[in-house]
Length: 119
Image 1: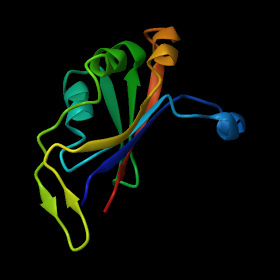
Image 2: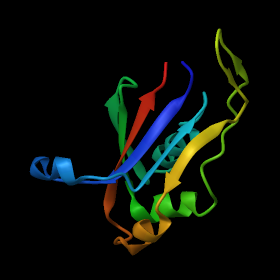
Image 3: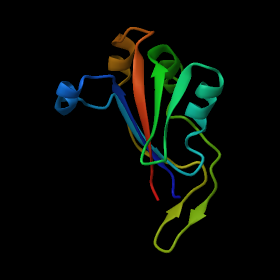
Image 4: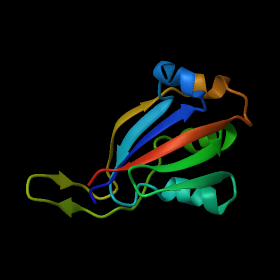
């Protein structure tokens, strides 16, 4: 495993699938799911299952905004040296977070989080 790619979206009807756009997305190295695992442990997010392709969660807007106000979630993942890549420990990248849109949502609205294994 090389890390994770996260996509955070509003819940939608199947008929709205083509209209959906991520409110936030980023990539993180190994250990990058710690932030959402912590929210699940605290009872403010729910793990819906998955095998990494993807793992699915729900989280209330207020909990997510509380995390993202501190910036992209930090983690203590290890340095990874592969055949044709290097990933520094705790790496995150390709960050796109629309805080204005997130703050405009009702605090108790449930959002979907998908975490895709980047192996």
